[in-house]
Length: 307
Image (tube, rainbow, N blue to C red; front, top):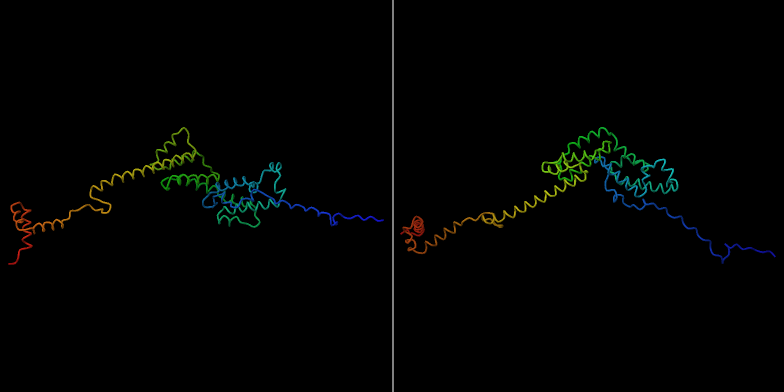
């Protein structure tokens, strides 16, 4: 008798084979960023010279989301110690690199975008092109910035904050072209450009044991400006308070800005009515001076009949 062996997979009573679980979707911190402008609030522009600020903010963001190696390749020694995502998961690496490239394109001006945009670019290539643009012609640009920095004067700005911000911007641009400005020089330039009204705070900054950091000198200047503004406003308020009673006592009112003038017409009418009171009134004024006589003459001129 021949024995038949049945295949458990084909048996109607046997359970179906287990399904293979799908491959987990790759995750990376950079995939969670939906709007890069929320984190980098500076738009890089060739005219404004904000490369140092922009690049520093971008590198901080890249470190926070583990993509710094997409714009600054690690050293050879670091590559030997750490396993790169580019080797373990090249598809995810390419995906993340495209996201970093979008971050770069989304935080620069339209002119710069048109300048560096190329087909099949990478984040590192775009980063290096921007670096080369802002480091080009270092000597000539350094000379121009030095001249601009040395002639900055506070009187050309609306307030102390704008004055300090312009100085800091020029200092950053000089650092970008290889001519960094020391804190001492930056603070001394701030003091030398002050107006006479702020000579006292300039003296405090200069005569300290050592020059303060730029941010502290800026704070001292802004606080002095705030105190002066409040003092001027208080003085104006007090002046208005004392002027108001004087104006009232001199005949001025809020509804009538002109001083009170006597109503000569009313006085003249009153004199006429008094003269109409009777001849005795006119006669009784005789001999009492020119005023009384004049009143009588006025009565005679107006009421004497032709017969």
